[in-house]
Length: 252
Image (cartoon, rainbow, N blue to C red; front, side, top):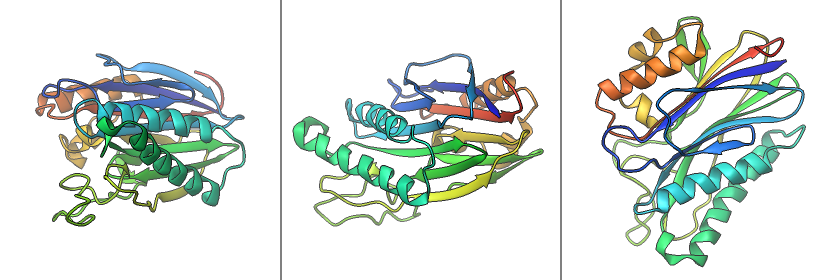
């Protein structure tokens, strides 16, 4: 089996820089795109799709998301990973981010959400920490596979170790002192025709579920570009990242 992907990341209308980073296989970028890039991956070898949404002010968010994307893309490029090893990789990445902060105090408190797919040999694991999302496209509907780490009332850490953001209850890094994470994972048995949507909250906060579903078409690139256009029209108040992927019998 193969995977056809349309990928896009952009700073949006309001933010000065893009603190989102996307990874498609070993291709990693936070460079702004005006239209989606297309990719084809061979699923006979392990493949990674992910979106990391950085936070931390100054350059911290960008540094964190790029580091998380690079670390996970490398660590997860291994065959036969399971729930235990995937959780371990995510926790190791979280710990590594805190270690990086010790080396550069100007980055103290930097962090990143992550949402992604590990795919190999007919299986996919959806994983996330934070509020970036993974959806399974079910015809004209979206079924969310990820779990949002969000509380309406901020409740994270103590007075000294302040909340990571006003809404997120956990992320990779994102605090002044080390805090472990509890990643969310879901397993999917793949078959040709399966379609998945990954996005940062710059998309899901701008468009409601009905608006996202109404943008779905069979053309991955067209759908990705339309979702981006709609999010920008709705205000584009945050960085916007979108990955749309379809499992196929052969390369497109």
